[in-house]
Picture 1: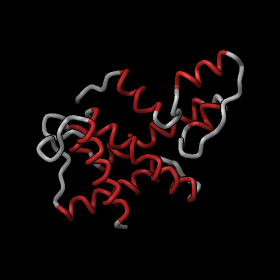
Picture 2: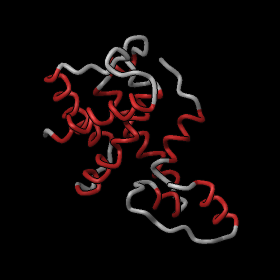
Picture 3: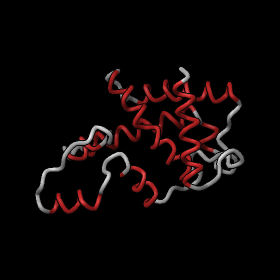
Picture 4: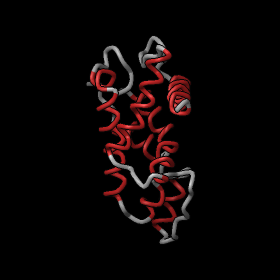
Length: 156
């Protein structure tokens, strides 16, 4: 399996928590209460020091993803889903999945399996595969993959 550096993991997860991590860090050190931001789905858990919830939600997302896109996740020589581009694209679409999950009061692994199954079905119908042949390895590729994943999700 492809490895994802700790730095890449943190960089992308931070996108779900803070728009300005340095400012947040300074405010935490000064005991200034951070403000919530509804555009950052994991921020309220961070502010509430509820790291176990963040861990569980991220674990549910990626174990659900692996279940549905098993081949794409387990074969990094052919597919890019378990590489930084794929991981980053999933983080980009997470806010949409999160909103649906909150509306359904369900952020379980089974919820994410259900939602990713819808995406996979639509990608398969269109003949879209998550390979480096279809997506490069830069930030634009991440954006393109996220766009295709969101379009597949919106077609439901």
